[in-house]
View 1 (cartoon, rainbow, N blue to C red):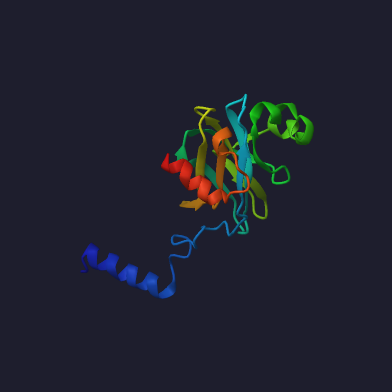
View 2 (cartoon, rainbow, N blue to C red):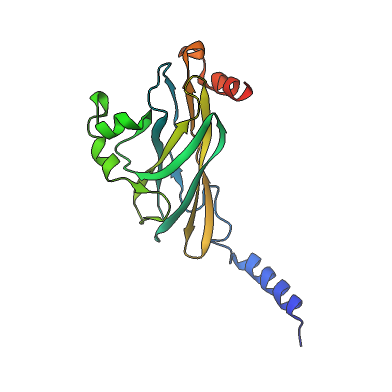
Length: 196
């Protein structure tokens, strides 16, 4: 009679030979293969509303099974905290605007008030095969008189019994008056904010 350890080792060897781990070792982004890299920044020395909304990283389910989005987080932050992650319409992208302006649909945000009213939390959102969403991040700037930044929206999601992690390539930079120089490379400004 074989021991349980011998059976487990034999099973692992067979699985590695016939590729049993098809869904347990996902490609770099798991079953969500497509994302659009966007970096955005806001130069707002007189920001009245410390809560902002960013929705600029589109993900699409190119598999044959639904995905359940479980949670979101910002991997690296400075003077910013995430309030809520949203499943945002992919045809209403935002580079970072005060929530009060989005909710009111003011001037260049005409058409955004309705998606704001009908917004859905990312936690528990089911992304059907072939469907797309933009990852929405509602965040709060702790001190509007200091520059702030975040890097990489991370989303944990599942497909069946398997869990995956998507690390978005985006970054957001909020600059106050001393550093509001849009002609400087945003990447250099981003690093400077994190160093301060």
